[in-house]
Image 1: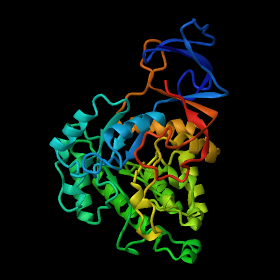
Image 2: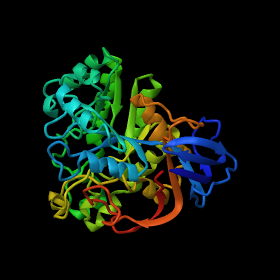
Image 3: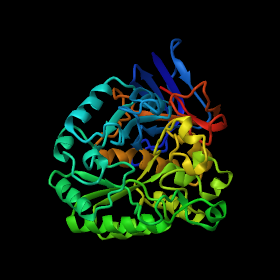
Image 4: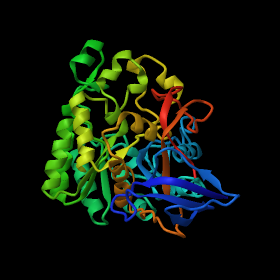
Length: 412
């Protein structure tokens, strides 16, 4: 099938066509022609819209997928379909499945199941056995079997010596160790940002210092071991400053931010909607502004959807007892289009495609005749409603369910 994309603006930082408006002819997933104006043939499907945007194919570095063991929340097939609908060409799953991806055999099994899926699914190897933070996993074997990096998912490593040994060991084969900066010993059971607003709501608080103390430890250990550290998600103003400080020292550190922390604040908790219960928690307005500036400046390297599907029984209940997490893959671009207008498309391309590809060793897409169409096409003017009629994910834990959204990915 031939598809002719008319008058699309290229947003591909540092590419010779960046900022130009072009026509593209795609046939069976291959770019067959690029030009200022391409005349259609009678069999071409014309793709046209107001202010179409072409981005290098999106990559999401943090998704929770339930397979194996928790398939009722999300399986590999539904996650891949949701990612494709959201414009993501590659996603990376956390290893905290059941059983945990902590061995070569577990990782190989996942890879075999993902071979023919429409969106490529990569995986982290667990940093520790069973992701319990006690004993190192088979890191070298996992790396050789295709693990992109090492993470214990949403389980922070509380043992400092354990984190030190992981960093030292990964340095031997140029591996990347991921950390979730959270000291659970500070206000155990905390679930929301520490602020006057959440205090009035009577919800148990998770102060910014719980993140920042652990972040300081991990940054110091990365500096000491000369190893590569990726901080999975940061959520506070001070965390942005700490990352900047250690980058300027030459420490090999990169970091991400969850999209929810860019879109929402603790003020959105006033209705006790458990869809806003996330980890890291939604912070204050100053934190949100600092995170957005961190993305703009490049201090924050990547934006992740932190796609965390949950079944309704775990979400539609009292806030205190509800599970953490929000589904994001299918709606991420639309939500950014509506609510993150201060972020330019170039910053989105950088943080959701180019930098993740660099960190994960994924080739950059080629915008030339004969190359595979590894791009995301987005119509910022098209309106749609995310609902049962069109969703691909198994879960519906998002505040924008059954609501009209502006901006939609166009499948090619």
